[in-house]
Amino acid sequence: MECDADTWGGYLTTPAVWQQIETVIADQDPELHPALAAEVIALAGFSLGLFFRITESTAVPTNLYPPPVIRSVIVQTQLARGLEAQEKKIRCLGLAPIPLAIVTGMGHANILAKALKLAEEPIDAQAIADAWVKNDAPAVDALSKDLKPYVP
Image (cartoon, rainbow, N blue to C red; front, top):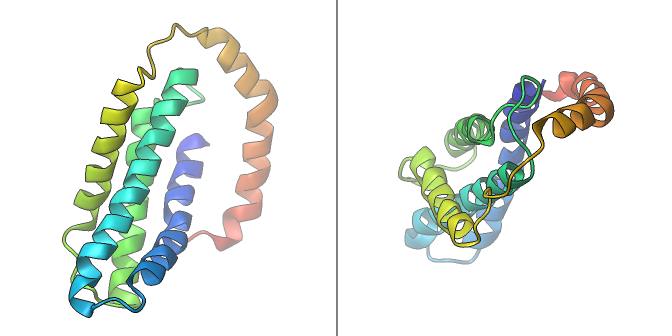
């Protein structure tokens, strides 16, 4: 369920990132558009990477909740695919490889997370697993049913 949610979340994040690109490049010299777009995409990767590092510092992998590194790769892959589709369909900016921009941003998030000493606390895996099954799993099931008609 979590992997499905991360797959959908990554793809559905695409329009928001693309809207940010359109906002940033508006009224800018067209020669700057690829570099500006790459910065927005790297910032999305940074946000994504930091989110999962924070998640990693407060939870542990279980059979119901994949490791944050796996989840971040799933979202990163789908976000890259979605942005590449937007690049071809909406506007060709001549961007360098989009996955590289995302991963670059995620790398900076890892540097910050290390400086903040995230994911260094001991964690009670059983308590987290029990809370996930009780509180979150039913909500994810409901969300999956609601989103199904809208997901590619």
